[in-house]
Image 1 (spheres, rainbow, N blue to C red):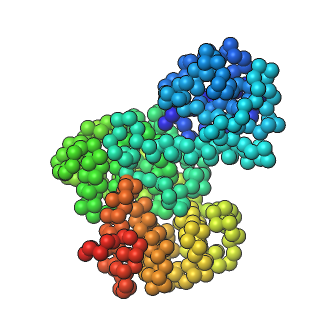
Image 2: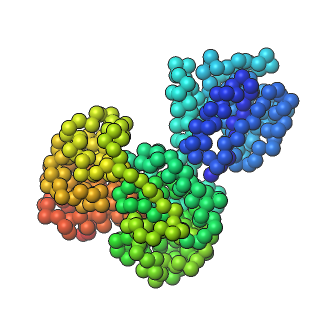
Image 3: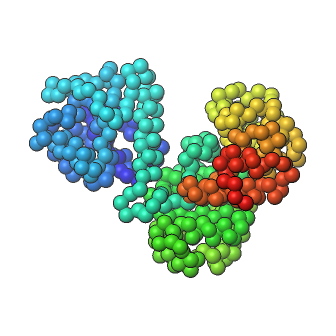
Length: 455
């Protein structure tokens, strides 16, 4: 994660201090530091800005146009930006917030600026800036970096998932801070080769960890996430596909295992495995990578970083449901979320299903009614399977596609097109082996999941 420097002058000091605090809360950068620039003679300190950092420059007295004298330190800063040594981000403020200094005119807004519209109130303007920076960070993280081999070296993704939201939607801020400590430089993973993250199934432990690793993906590279219940052949494929990004294919299992043993920044996540030793013949546990286990069924918590969440009460459910769907949680919606018993992750997924795919609550309630005895989010994959059967019968390709996206999320495969297609075929096989619905093959072909070859 990069360090963000925010340059400020006294006229906008309060505004930028408040904005910096909001950026810190989103954990977009390793550090957010403020530098006060009161006059040109004090800008020589800008020459010490480290390579690779991001620099926010407000479009006020502290900003100089590109045609300014190149001897000026701000001009040199712009030259470093153009040379790729650092990233310069112009910040456009509301005109009412700017008090121009006599030694510089207010510039026009250069390309690539982020900022506030004149009609924004303070909250809207600050949110606009934070969201723009978040998009920049996401785009930067998806680009190949110097020394990388192939695509992003991470075996999980939140991009494109309909319920990929800020972690505070799923958990309270104190639980996020606990995970932040777990994954930070001073956290448990830095001190111990094996760490446990314990939480109750369905409350959002895995989703929270995914959010944390998404923010810290530059610290752990590569990440291998393995889910319990996945066939051993699929686990073998995950390891070999990850190794093929660094080694010349074809890669044997022995070569992939040898490569993994050497990954000092690697992280192996075992999601709900009874014992890591069940994998020792497939994935080396004696290498340099860290090991993080997710335990969901309770038990001895000594030495664990625990996730303690309570089901949402009715007021919280209504708030989150309306926040996601834009609708009030009416009687039909209440009947839909009632089987989830207030479990956060299930309600978030359910609300996004309704919003993303425009599923009428009454229609979804009919699918629930067949399996009302499943009073736990642990049965959500089973319910989704049954929903897909209904979707196929009603020729609803969107819900079919969502089931496959759910499978991708569950198995945590990399977001490479060929891997998505391969897993889509595996998901189709698994689904249709349990389904008596006819006509699935032609539908899958129309969706581009198969190409006419035998599955």
